[in-house]
Length: 182
Image (tube, rainbow, N blue to C red; front, side, top):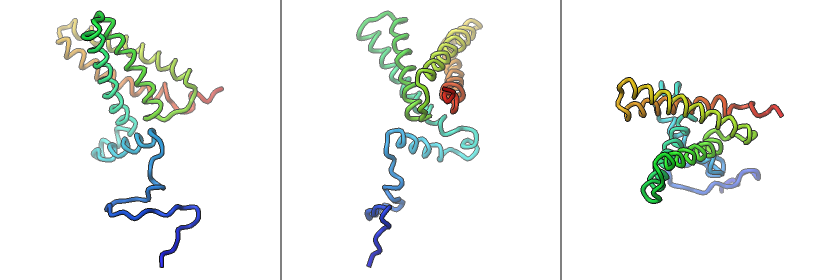
């Protein structure tokens, strides 16, 4: 005779899955919970030395940045090839939309912050402007001016940009407690 579960715990359905866990206790409830679960699982398969150096939010940032970069390129292709917009305008439209989407997705899914969105947006805009000036204009242009191939210069600048943006989002834009000051 089976003993019923305590009243505060629903009965778990039977399953043949070898590593099944109680679905009610462990099932993520929101998209942010599901994203965090997947992000943490990917982080868990990193080598031990990498897990000590790379926070789980960096894994989430890399995933979301890859997605928003693809959106950026898609918008660029649509604006330039399909709509026939001038290249600088097409690049700018893709860049602005991708960075806006990155802010929203990282705020909601990766960092899961709920502070003052206006202050966070202001800090994010400052971060994006600094990023653009430091890495897109100054670093990439300087590297190209001293003889580095323009694509290689952009790749180096892009790598620096990714590290800068992650660190700024984690430590400045979405830092815990920064929006708690009324």
